[in-house]
Amino acid sequence: MSDSAIHISLQQERPMPLAVELQCQAGELLALVGPSGSGKTTLLRAIAGLYQPQKGKISCQGELWQDSTRQIFKAPHQRHVGLVFQNYALFPHMTVLDNIQQAITHVPQQQREAEALKLLEKVHLDGLQQRYPKNLSGGQQQRVAVARALARQPKVLLLDEPFSAVDQVTRRKLYRELLALRQSLAMPMILVTHDLEESNLLADRIALLHKGEILQTGTPEFVAAQPKNATVARLMDQQNLFTAKVLAHDKSTQKTHIRWQGMILEASYQAQFAVNEPVCWMIQPANILLHRRGRPSNGDRENPLQGQIIEYMESTGLANMLVRVAKQLNIHISINVPLHVAKRNALGLNEKIGISLLAEGIHLMPYQTLRR
Amino acid sequence: MDWQALTLSVKLSLVTLIFLLPIGIFFGRWLAYRQFFGKSLLQTLLTLPLVLPPTVLGYYLLVAFSPNQGFGLWLASTFGTTLVFNFQGLVLASIIFNLPFAIQPMQRAFAAIPREIREAAACCGMPPRQVLWKIELPLAWQGIVSAMVMCFAHTLGEFGIVLMVGGNIPAETQTIAISIYDRVQAFDEHAASIMSLSLLLFSMLTISITFWLSERNQHTHV
Image (cartoon, rainbow over all chains, first blue to last red; front, side, top):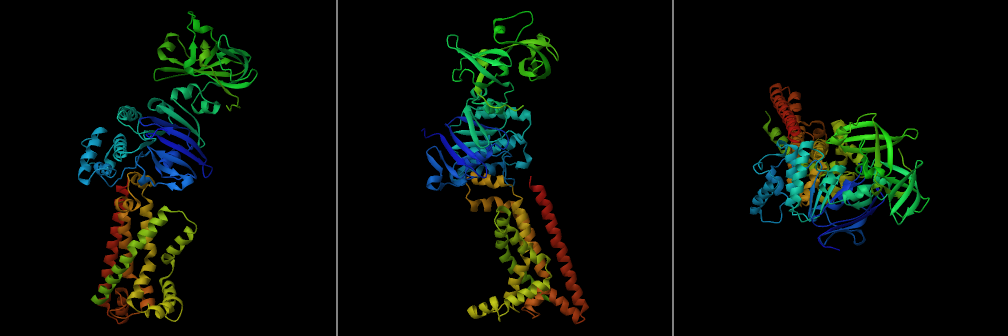
């Protein structure tokens, strides 16, 4: 157990269920992701000491903050926590400088101003120290909130959806600033977000929370590509999620075959599922190849399917399509290709196309009923 | 102008404020932030003086303070003192009938401070007492001042309860409101009109201050 990490273990049944086992290393950015009401903010508040769950233990950098078995619960002001609130919660009656100085307690009074000015410089707000929060833009307010959180010299930095109250242009700028800033921060960082794109961009690891329970943790790429079950896949916004039955495992070719809607698909070797066992399976759009018209390639031989584009949308350099692969069964697969590829192949609504599902990208999961 | 009555009224109002300030802050904050069993009942009781006819409240206070029974008897037998027809009695009555005027605006002012701001202060390392001094009181001060101004004006002009509990003893319990009544009874219309006009102007001033503060409050809280 590393001393520089934060260790969180919380259990509660009421008023909202919590079943959390987490740790975050120093310098690591862990994103708590999940839908609204999944308990992300409650968990963050519990870490800060603003909420006391019935049972659990929280220790950070060797300090015990909560241990229900020993009746230990440290109040928020006794924990060194830097918390950036969703709406920043700046003190409206104080200037930017005063806001930051309130959290500086580790240096003598006469050095606090200089310390606060240093932090303002760090978040690129030098020169605005005498302004009041109401005279700052959303992005500037967020930076003050970050500076104030860091002023506490926190043992853990907690960020509660800090980008949700700013416009998209500012948000991208703040993402870049956070990515740069975090290089110099040596404490565990926990970010709450419901935005998967945000967690992919910023986090080293994500913890997926659903109804107060951590369903899976891992790198954003891993959780998206290898969800533990169909619920995780759904919460990770995987569109191509289906049910099938395992047909056979072939150890020599390292392939597993599944039967899906009368078709046989080849998947990577996943022998943990028994033959004839019903399963759920998914494939990320990135693992679906588009057949180039008139120029077949090797990849085209992997699970080839013919279909018709029934939805076509262009956004941020990608063409997102919904392809109906079996008209009578109404099976739809979501794919996306770079916009220039879509243009070159003259893709559009109602066009007929050929696609291949890459066997390596087909991920099997335990069976559960899928709701449409 | 009955300067003695005016001085007594101002003294009564100021002494009442000294007691009501901490009481209002304590109860206002408690009611704004805490949920507890019986909160509605407590709020009803605290609001009662607002709707009860002053003579009714005055009557009950007179009964309660009477040295022949209950609280008044205990006070007389334990401390050898009484609360009827004297200044101390008037102070206690003033505190009681001003409770809603003190607590309600303060409760609203504390409730208007977003929870996150108080929590942010705690996360900055401030213990609860410091959160009160550095965050809550500066953010709620308009509500507190406006409550105090209302209580001052209300005490200055209160008639029914003062007459019931204190009677009409010059220099002891004869406040300006009672003095006006006294002057009218004595057909001294000149004195009555000067004192009435003074009270009218003062009331207008206090109401203007409270409106101005509440406007300012809306502009400051973003």
